[in-house]
Length: 251
Image (cartoon, rainbow, N blue to C red; front, side, top):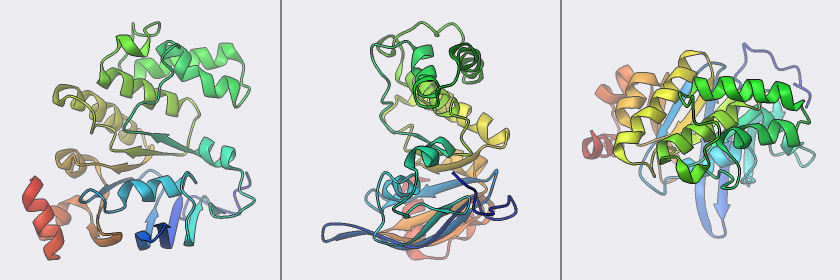
């Protein structure tokens, strides 16, 4: 995948006037936002406001109807796009962990680099073991997903995404299906990544986390970005009534 003369002083991801419909239902109605290298962006908003659809468009899981999404200068909507190359750069962690139940945690992490990128097994295994340490799962290498808690499975999923050495990771409501006591261990793993400089885009309901970790917060409602800003001003100076109402319900 060529970088199309992209340089790190430009946005890593550039989204311009993106529209997306499912049948007659317009889910995204002209979304524009930039994400710079090393930034942590949180997208918040009521259910059905298009948040998950938006991030699924970034790695071409959902094709867009109009507008532009560029990742490192590469147009995601280009029919000639190499989706595999894109998804190597743009990792994704879903609400449901999507782990292979018959593979151990370590095997789950190793699969894509070995099978998709054809990397040497020994190197990948070393990397996978380091990643398990990084997400605080030492000793769980040989455990199967069914033997792990939801929070542990989600951390395996994060390590699996990291194993491809992506430039950005998309997190889609990754704590929504978890028990409250395991939410924090997953958020802590993401926070560590953010502090290490990984570019992260999170769709999340965890406002405390967003306030603490995000560089910029976008509030979406009914397919548009209503308001956005850094946490310091976003939570205290939200001016749109829709944002104020949303925040009053969850803070």
